[in-house]
Length: 308
Picture 1 (cartoon, rainbow, N blue to C red):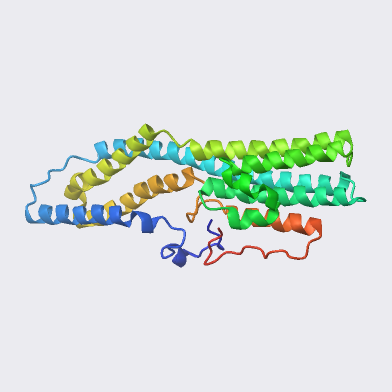
Picture 2: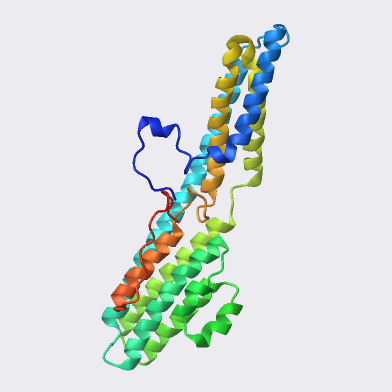
């Protein structure tokens, strides 16, 4: 995710970090080049492209704007829902840790080990959710927080976060059997685990259910057709200004189209997607501090205004 201070008027036009321009400049160049060719032809032979009027392009532009607006709203809703879900995960992880430290008997070695195990598994679960959503290898970050006896089964699990959640449930059941906490508090802690499971399922739903392909295809086709036809309809009335106007319109429409694609999948590593690495590191730091451990990793800070 891009993290930067408010830009002044001058920097707005020259900032590329986080901008959509690097992804759409081929389309902008194509439309601009086509517009230049059409303008030159019209200048050399004024009757080549007669004036059709701007009404058809105005109507089509309005329709395309509505399509792009609906799609961007749908993509942003997915992005915002993903952020809300990770906010819920932060809340659940902190609340579960507080309950474990407050209500699991720490006067015995078994109680202290249960506290440490469940909190470490919560950290591992958080990292596992992030890696599952991004399709990256989780083992380096997760293995230190999981007992070696579970490593073989963990590597064989089809859904790693769900496997870790089952381990946490078994550990909580062991706390109940050893009477290290009251029945009521065990039930409350289990509700926190259920809430984290709901977050996992909701994130998987967003990740595995893209916007309908037919709708995306319609927007793509209409955007290309509109921007390619535009110079032929404007050249008779605008003359040499046609390439500039067409370039600006292409930037707007192709930019909205590409930005909606980026926001549609909020859990990736693109510049405008969610900073899951920073969020999971925040959870890790908070939980290790609560546990009283000294080997705490540093916060993840933005690099060149980019926060992973």
